[in-house]
Image 1 (spheres, rainbow, N blue to C red):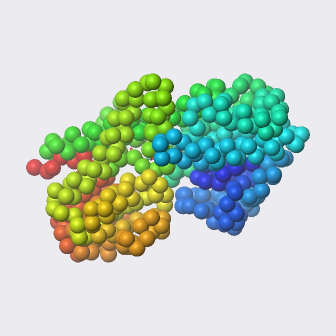
Image 2: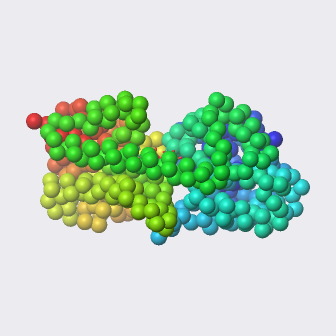
Image 3: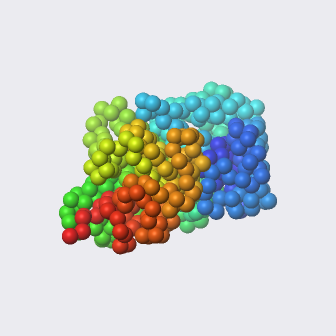
Length: 437
Ligand code: UGA
């Protein structure tokens, strides 16, 4: 068996590394030649726990990395894992998926094999049927279901846990027609991810499952953030005790009840916007999802307000943002709330210093010389008038009175409550904690 994966981002690179490290002949394909050569040397182009180790093992065993799409010709399964970024109007940009499926179609026209094409990229319900399938059939002059298989296979992995989630996802979703190709794919996944439930449904439902999943996660986060904001107004109330306890109710469940500055990253904000757009187009007022998005945006505005209330005019003030990765365990800053906060404060005239254990280089690409980038926490805090903890890095739990000694004004906003048990000699606000009485 030979497998191709097209698009070597978080999903694609994790998948080809895991497959090949298990001894399956795998080709990782990406149009970016520089990216390919780095990966071929065993260097991932982003930070992800255990990825480098798995990639190196994969390269030693069965992984080939190339920018040549024609290498898919002798493959049995072709996974498409290219990005579907967001356009300015909130719709998703299908250009990469259209180009790739167009090229796959052309190659299929001369291919004697009957490969199975699996689309992992997140696409709006209807895209497989109305866009991907017609492109493939038109360019190949062949029939899906007869000459090749086409299956929706949405991905649920989380950054920071990509390798773990690729090996053991909570579910495998296969969307498409119940043909011999579907049976072959089901067999493949039952071996690749043993004991994981496999859900077989049609394309549109598979596409919708992905959006429903991410929308529900975002809803949980905005729900707990709203409760956290209420807690803040009630002296001595603690959102973590509230979240941990309601999470014990099996109908609610613990994950994704960690209150904070709002959700970020390349997926939840984009997917919520896309489903809101789709819903409106279908004439269904997306009341709940719009509120989820509104609460999310409000979290950052609340932090900016808190800074203003406590230090007065922001112009000229030295402020430190602790954490710009969109969550711990990654150097990814796409749609990060830490980055958004730094942007908002810069616009108000603040002098910003940024600290992050992994994402400083990526932050530099955005702010260039407009902010300072400091590797040690205590140096980042020196002379600042307010520090705001945005990402829940373990490193921030070690902050103590010595670390904050040289702050010009000892004022800390802790959006993740990592310092809530410390007796800091500072004015301290935390999201979700009522003031101590
Ligand atoms: C998310 C989903 O969790 C994955 O299942 C999905 O496959 C992926 O999107 C995708 O569509 O590709 P990811 O973007 O890696 O994964 O990040 P999450 O772990 O979901 O976190 C998203 C944001 O929510 C982060 O900013 C995080 O800090 C925030 N969050 C998460 C909270 O504020 N509280 C929580 O309790 C959980």
